[in-house]
Amino acid sequence: MNPAPETRLAIVTGASRGIGYAVATELGRRGYRLALLARRKPPLEEAAQRLASSGAVVDTYPCDVQDAAQVRATFKQILDRAGRVDVLVNNAGVGTFAPVHQISDADWDSTLNTNLRGVFYCSKAVIPRMIEQRLGHIINISSLAGKNPLPGGSAYCASKWGLMGLTYSMAEDLREYGIRVSVVCPGSVQTEFTPHRGKDAARMLQPTDVARVVGWLLEQEPQSFVSEVLLRPTQKP
Ligand code: NAP
Image 1 (cartoon, rainbow, N blue to C red):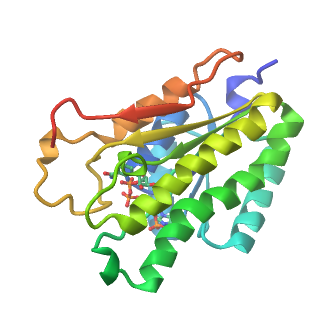
Image 2: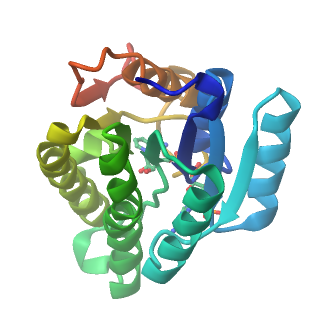
Image 3: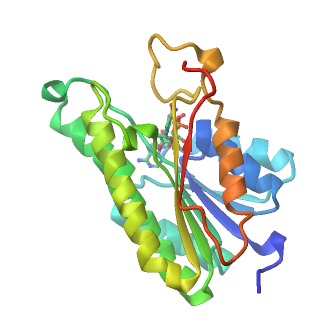
C-alpha cells in the first residue's frame, strides 16, 4: 500500500537552483517532504526558505555528490530522520565544454565524478531501503547530450552517455522490487548551467518543463513505468 502523501520523502540533488529547484517546487506542491542537496549551503538554504514559504516541508543537506563518504553520511542522516525514501532525483550536474584535447584532467574528472559517479553513490545510498520498502522511484536527469554527440562535449557527453547505461542497467536490477528507474533527457534549458552561446533563450525549455515531466513520472500506476523521456523544445533554440 502506498504511504500517505505527507509522509513520502523525495530527495533532490542539485536543488539550490535551475532544474533541481523547479523539481523540488513541483514535488513540494505534490505533498512530498523534501530533502535537498547541493554543495554550497547559503544558496541551498535560500532555496529551502522560498519553498517553505509556499508550504513545503524542507530539510537541507550541503553535500558534494562526488565524495563517497559525504554521500554515505548525508543519506544516513536523511534516512534516519525520515525513516523512508520514496523518490530520488539525481539532478546535480556540471558541464565542461571544450575540444577534447583542451580538456584538463581535473575538468574531465569533475564532470565524470559529478554526473556519473555521483549518481552511483546517491543511488547506492537509497536502494537498500527502497528494496526493503518494495517501492521507490529513481529519476536521473541526463540530457539529449546523452544520446547525441556535441562538438566540445566529449567530457559532458561521456558522462551523460554513461548515465544512460547506468540508468538502464539499474532499472533491470531493481524492477523486480517494485523500484522504477527512469531517465529524463532534456534539450537546452534556460538555467545558469552553461552560457548557451548563440541560442535564443525565449525558445529554450524552462526548468518547470523538466519538473512537470518528473511529476508525471511519479503518477504512474504500480504495474507500469516510463523508462526514458526525451524532452525537446518545440522550436530549435
Ligand atoms: P545549474 O543551474 O548549474 O544547477 C546545478 C545544481 O547542481 C546547483 O544546485 C549546484 O549547486 C548543484 N551541484 C553541482 N555540482 C554538485 C555536486 N558535485 N554535488 C552536489 N550538488 C552539485 O544546472 P541545471 O541547468 O539546473 O542542470 C541540472 C541538471 O540538468 C544537470 O545534470 C545537467 O546536466 C542537466 N541538464 C541541463 C540542461 C541545460 O541546458 N541547463 C540540459 C539538459 C540536461 P552547488 O554549485 O552549490 O553545488
